[in-house]
Image (cartoon, rainbow, N blue to C red; front, top):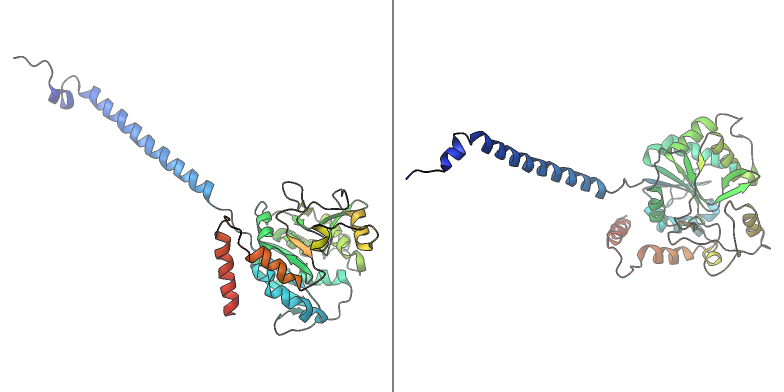
Length: 320
């Protein structure tokens, strides 16, 4: 019987040879393309899920000899431990705090100049961002780190509780001030050495304004530290004022803030962010209450990641 179809000829020879070869090449090309597309998508997915670099926060905490036992040691036992690095600056020595000591500098502006110059000289490469705070501040460092993830430490920008006076923008100095590494460098290397850009004379209570002027003169931007809902993260006064209470225009500090706040204030209240970063402390023992509720209390259903990080911190503190 005559065979009209020969599979061997179809696959290996005869007139069909090149047609079948083209089919194999075609399907082989599709397979290779699918593999390449898969690898591309996998690479893209890896890029999308790769977490942003964790901002390194160097905390500078200003204290004084008469406040070492009353305030500063409690800051060291609580929120300071959440900074990547920290240093206390004081006017006298202390065994537990181990502060950097600057004696006989009475003017606040002169102290700020000296402190920031020292930090740049000896600690610049230990942080991406530098928090300049007082021993009567309570800081939620994790919330600060979360805010800073949206920015680069190479940006000329700084944050705090934003104020305005006759066109000059500055930060309220009782609420903590955060400078990018680039801003600190620009301040020390360009502003401090130029009298036309930054005064070397005593400024008294105008220290915060002078810092704002110096930074502005070297093109450092005063950033908006409010959250995505325009609620405040750097708060000027005590917790009870901002949560449940209100400011009082007859109180001198409140009056000053109400008159100079960069953002309009209604009903004598600041809208408080759920990711608040800094409060002012009037009663130092409340530090432990705030620390417990912000750092230790576990909210049912919340991610366990932070709890593990916090546990490691507690274990480290215990062994120290």
